[in-house]
Length: 230
Image 1 (cartoon, one colour):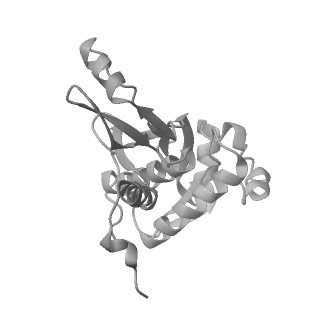
Image 2 (cartoon, one colour):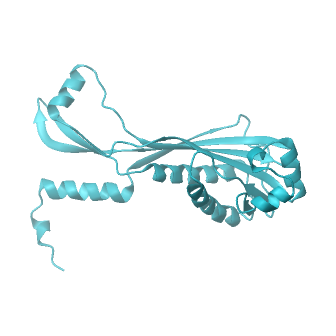
Image 3 (tube, helix red, strand yellow):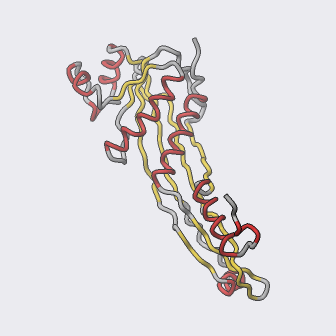
């Protein structure tokens, strides 16, 4: 199919292509990790059973979506995952109370049921970045004149992983993963005294930031805890 517009590039077309690139790339993500001092004291072993609790800070449906993401990664590592929500009745019959799952008594009962670890998840620090912002050349010149920095409206989310050992009956490792997705800044045509205006576009969502933080955090958790060995 012949595309005649390629022979006559213009600013509108270029801007539209840049917007499409932003949409496809999902803006610019960055992830930071904070973990317990001393690192993970254990090595997850293939074949062990991991009970995964319902995530705090999000809806039950969203928590299940994250569990499904985690389920595939855990199985690939050779670990046997189980979702506490799906096991709720069985856990209660054995005396495990989900609302106090991390106390010593519950962890001991989990061990009797064959679970080597319990993973507690929490999602927080969620913020939606500005979808579209425009700064004129004159505004940019004034900001530089008065040493004012433009606001950086990032989309961000934090996922916290608390890993409990049922044998030790305590929390053994904590990992916090924060992902921020920055907007992409595109130059505008207007100029004033050497300054060019700009447009910032952030097409990311909180859901996207949560997914990236969760995926990166799961990978980091397995790396830190040397998952998995035979």
